[in-house]
Image 1 (tube, rainbow, N blue to C red):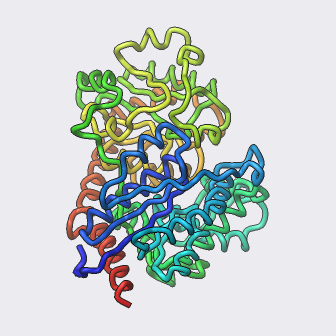
Image 2 (image 1 turned 180 degrees about the horizontal axis):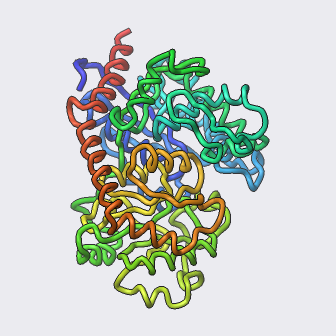
Image 3 (image 1 turned 60 degrees about the vertical axis):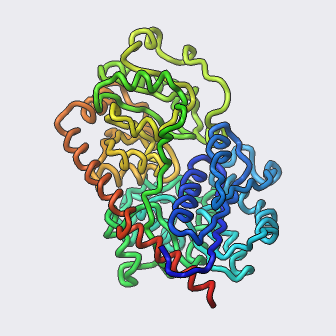
Length: 478
């Protein structure tokens, strides 16, 4: 990719959690594949779940090395009921000494530093080492626009954002409904809000921002990032490089996990199965799970449903996805498993999502709208039912339904009340068998082709990554 013979060694710091580790690993793979003179070392916290271990352990190659940082004990630093954003922020703060030492002990010193969103407090380490530093925001441009403008909103808006009756005007994207703000903005008295405002303000301290989208997906917002007149109250903006879509590869040629599941999928008609999975931290209440089961049954559509025990707090599942046992009989409606035998599969705790979404029998995705899952759905041409739960997922759901037109969603958000079985049935049938669903399917297939083109040589994301690599190579010569 580059025209230089200099060796570039990128050090990438990842936050814990499967949703953060996956895009960092894919960025590392993309970098080493881009140029023979690039090596990457990824620093990740010790895995806390089986799914994380299965993702991290096999990732190392001669040019891509994964180093596990020692676990940090934050039990005396945060409240036992602290939100995920607070826990992640404190973890990444406490791991800085170990990360700094690990960088200094490397046999081949890093010549480029990349941190993910929760690692912005480690950006000064790049200054200490005299190397360029970047922030990797593994999400979309609306989310970045909101973050860049949040320190201004913090000064200008009085009271709670969710109590406003007027939408929040954010430069670069459409007006944001108060109910669609990211989780840390729901309560300004909570520690996660102050942590959020801090890392939002630190993002521009990097030399650039890597974004997991492609130019053609959100051209208007990306254009705003490059035009000072459109940035409004954003006091400082650094170059934004859309380098996506970076997603987990399908495990082709390997022994398949859940072999029985794929044997069943292989026998189903093309695009006839809806895949229901709410992410590594996604859980439902008992009442909502009952309605979900009835809705799937009433839709009369084939399904695969990844189920976790019901709970009222999604944070509890964030660091433990894929762990423990799951007795389905204790929380499914009586007779559901028998009545749907042969029509659907209920999978406890975890399933190989990327492999399932790439299967030709899958025609819809009932998703929490996490950005990793969203990209996996789009890059496989699979339309979605949006069921946002936490983080920036409410904003993502609005983007998918109202801007990109590749999803449908409930009339009343699922965090406000239990969504009934009739509405779930209606959404499933719309996305799978009705005319409106075919129109949505056509749109998502257009985006699939657009993303593929962006990653190919000469495409927008290929060129954006080339700019980052080329600039870092030039910095090596100085």
